[in-house]
Length: 313
Image (tube, rainbow, N blue to C red; front, side):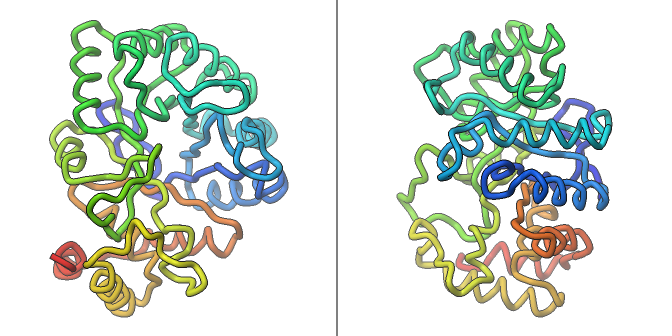
């Protein structure tokens, strides 16, 4: 698996990131281990989790995913080979949503314990907190970096202007800058006025920001839970705009041309875009995961990229 730079950190990470959201809930430990083994054997070294995963599941309260990832790292003895990302900011159990210094530092300690690690490679502010001064949040991240508990910090579900506000505060005070932003993104475009609160979708302003600031853009909910390939999975209402059908037709046409699935074309399209996008992939089976990994072998022509980008105006 290829690697790509992570922002301006000087670190390279796998070009596909494995999402561990449902490890320990939808997938038991054995199933989760098998998926991580498969990803690792394909050359993948970048795994993403969070403190809240997955409280909304029937058998979840939050904090299920991190221990499974930590147990796998310990059993496989490959910690030094894997780049681990986790997050704090959303509420779960008795923890409120927010990015106060106290919450960030407390949740980092809990995540380290659940993971069984001394250091988290990438620690995200999982959601913006407009009620806490950006200075307080960044100073707390800075203390974690100085203590060796966190290596790099990122943001998720942030608007571009808030990223820039944080960047300026960090540079002024010597605090860490957000090296990346993880946002909802897929090939279909949200219709005007659509929202995903509390999630944030990528928009043109964010694309322009990351392109010129050298910030890595990671995408989640890339394949819309199978809606591109499974007839029984409806496209979410937020994506049913005037350009939806023409973009779906173009996507399917390109997929036939390159002998791939629409999902694989989306993953290839993201990686070949300007700015390039690093997709998070997830799977409930070895077959699904392999299909995602096989997207790495697809190269779209300039003409195909142009058609995909221009579809729907």
